[in-house]
Amino acid sequence: MIVSFLLIVPVTLCAPEKHHKKAQTYEVEENHNVTVEWCFSSRVDVSVASLKIHCLLTPELKVFYHLDQSVKEPQHQQFSGRVHCDVDALGAGRVRLHLSRARTEDSGQYLCRMSTGFGRKVNEFWLNVTAAADRLKPVLPPPQPSGRHRIFLCLCLVLPVAAVVVLVSRLCCSSDSP
Ligand SMILES: *[C@@H]1O[C@H](CO)[C@@H](O)[C@H](O)[C@H]1NC(C)=O
Ligand SMILES: *[C@@H]1O[C@H](CO)[C@@H](O)[C@H](O)[C@H]1NC(C)=O
Image (tube, rainbow, N blue to C red; front, side):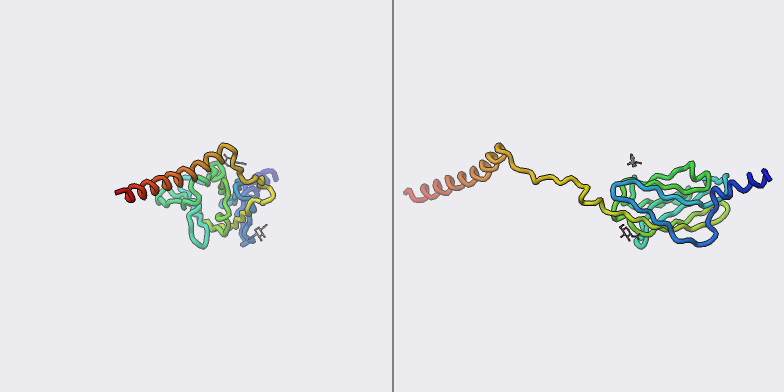
């Protein structure tokens, strides 16, 4: 009884879904962090070295995350420096990716292909990044030119005009004179 209980526990903790369930949707406000997570293996002895993960944002097929010791594939610059994979979770059969400072253009459908020594798996999820609510943004008054700035602005406008007037009048005078 106890033995069977112990045997069942790791499987129930991380059982890849047998049936195709509805793709998970993650909602996040822009500039916030979001963690996407799914289970790809019920094994607790996953070799991270032989693991391959390839995640794309569709339909443009931008590389969101790529893990493959044999093939280097550059991550799309949109995600550069913003995706962090939890390696400890990988060893326990879970993919856990942290995306920081979410942008509205990160929204869309993501497809991830995984390959372990034991088989392949595809996972799909949606990310919905909502624009930061306008009401939360501080409403700043338009900058008012201070007195000193106004004088500076006046000088900037008046001096060149005055210089041109002086120059033109001098030129006129010199051409008039015999
Ligand atoms: C978001 O993630 C970044 C980098 O992982 C971290 O420095 C920052 O503290 C996180 N922000 C929040 C609100 O959790
Ligand atoms: C994304 O969020 C917005 C606002 O909450 C909602 O109207 C829209 O239906 C969501 N889209 C998806 C694909 O979940």
